[in-house]
Image (cartoon, rainbow, N blue to C red; front, side, top):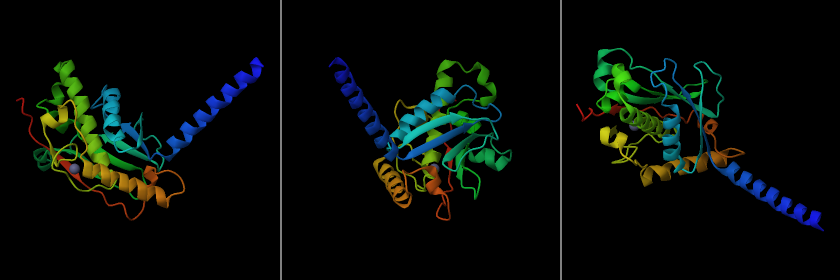
Length: 230
Ligand SMILES: [Zn+2]
């Protein structure tokens, strides 16, 4: 009698787990891979991943982050976020681009972020990072997450900017460090529509692999506004 009861409750637990798994399988999957080949933003990954996961979760996607060594093999369903120094031309330095999005024909989808420019937008000098202190480090990680989040939304096919929030054309120190920075409603609606369209044309849930092919055209870069704490 007792055994029967426990079997019955075990069955219920299994049914609940199975239900949860199938619900999760329906959610779009945003599989993100962090690559920082020269350790420009070393130590920021846990905070960066947590912040951008929270930011992008509002799109309804199931967001996963992995840190990978440079040159790691990445599948078609992943997007690589690469931290690189600003390309060393004077024009680039003056333009203060914090991040950019590119599609490659056969390689993994990738976005680039430029930690030196993100630091500049915060009024910090990346070459003096050793003396920054805890608060500056926390703000740096948060700002990197937001620049990455902005470019990831572009990579999802949203090429336009919004008057405010994460998808503003310029993110200044206040936006990069505010306790909360949201994705505006119009952008959220556009991202969800892109997920739905992709899911309809695929057999399973939406993944980044849905973005591959001739329709993927996102190419945008975001420039920094000068740091206000100089
Ligand atoms: Zn942008």
